[in-house]
Length: 326
Image 1 (tube, rainbow, N blue to C red):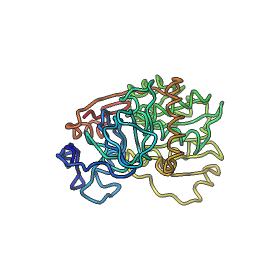
Image 2 (cartoon, helix red, strand yellow; image 1 turned 90 degrees about the vertical axis):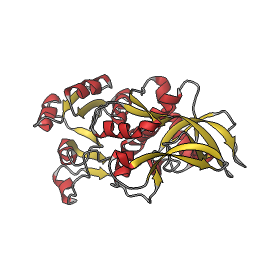
Image 3 (cartoon, rainbow, N blue to C red; image 1 turned 135 degrees about the vertical axis):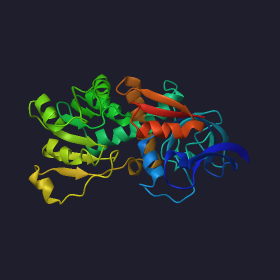
Image 4 (cartoon, rainbow, N blue to C red; image 1 turned 45 degrees about the vertical axis):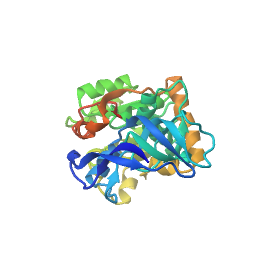
């Protein structure tokens, strides 16, 4: 057995519901590896799962992604060696830990040019941006895209990458400071959606032009406005609910708003197959190498301070990515 420390959730609720506990890890079984984790990525889905918005069987671990080094190999593992740097974002809940046993088919090798922290900060968010920009809608040069929460971890990546693809990028964010961050991330226009009349301000800034695709991770507070800000025959992509679930609508509303398309995708089905996972990760790492996306780490917390990390995220006190460090 291997000694480890992991954040365990035994009841849904406030950040204080999380507890760092000592656990015993068995040796890795067939097809699995033991990782010593060096950097753990935080994603807002962690908050939803902690609160029970997305119910889970309890008790449970939390967290989806991390970077680490392989300490032991289970039987039958091919393509990896002890000491290899690897990362994952779809190995099941439990990345909030200093050591973990992970199926090898959920791992991707981290290139030498990418640091442990950058990989942990960018893999889940970069893979999200990858499917949104290349699969849900293949962004083309000259198109206008609207990114809500453009100063967030995924938002900044979407903006930079869409700009690198030749798009005109319009963003929204929750304060003047965050709008400045969004502009640094590539937004041609950034509007503060905490202010009244922001949809009208956005249209004034674009000369009345609406977006070919709207990427909405905010949900309740922005969704109906997203329908108004999509061009005729445009696509509204609802991929999160930071402000709460989006309101239900009648399908006829999509017709009235301009024969719009609406989708609610997820990163996990896009990376369920190991070959797809590694191909998509290679595209993300190539985008990092080219400078199309950049890790902007807004805050680092020790693993033992996961509660503080969740408080900061829910209070929207940070911009960019949050890391937990074992």
